[in-house]
Length: 376
Image 1 (cartoon, helix red, strand yellow):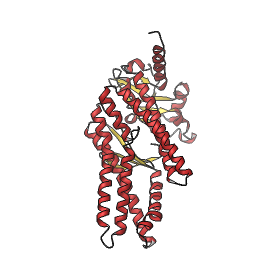
Image 2 (spheres, rainbow, N blue to C red):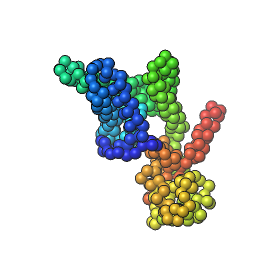
Image 3 (tube, rainbow, N blue to C red):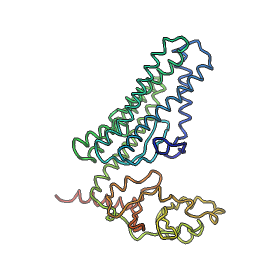
Image 4 (cartoon, helix red, strand yellow):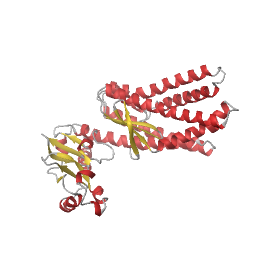
């Protein structure tokens, strides 16, 4: 996700944090320390409320991390590649490959909400148990708040709307029942779009009635609607490309450039002569080493172009989508990482033999549409 930085590792995968997380912690701590705790446990000092609210906000973010860790750990146990876990203002996101069976998809989807519900129940029980003890009123209140927050998040995530976990559960159940993955994907994404619109409408109504929390529901609804629309489009593409091999879609031959060239020499000898927005790179042995975007080259200050090697501003091969000519195109598309563009490097025997771009996919989609509108 753009705007996030790597801060560590969890469940064997990189952990990233979006810039919005510190802001979320501050907002949560402010609401807990200025509104909730003074009402639940009146008569304490501002220092007590400030410290307790900061601890509560951090614990809630830790709960969100455990939710996403459950997804990542379950996915890894089921042999699914997990790219990273990212925390951001609307919770968390775990990027991973597509499950290959409905059972695996169900297990991965349900693991997160179950973790949140378990944390919520444990925290709520602990808070209720501590409340009668003298001097433990504030910690008990923080635990009760943490428990209700996790129960709410667990229940919210179980709403039957992709990309929420509940939508993934519905998706897995429909896939299991019908045996048609793409049909299940389309149904789950449609429910996500509907649920997103309903959440936005409810949020606006709440906001107009004076409830500031309605604005959060508006953002959540907007996020669900946008992502669900993207997933619906992806499901349509997968349906259209069913059975198509990478070799049937790739463009060949491919314009390439040497990765050891300076940025200025690469621009002069390769980029200005290319008709593409990105150019694959080859190392000294003629093997692919990555891909460089022309806009990245254009953004290099003129004074640095003679000092920088083009490979220093390129997307390394480890982050590129790679496929063999015989691979299914739909499976190869799942390997594309956000921010790298819709490009698949086609490699056979360690050598670059072609590339699949967004234009190639668009061409195949147009052919699919023409076939669908032909006489039956």
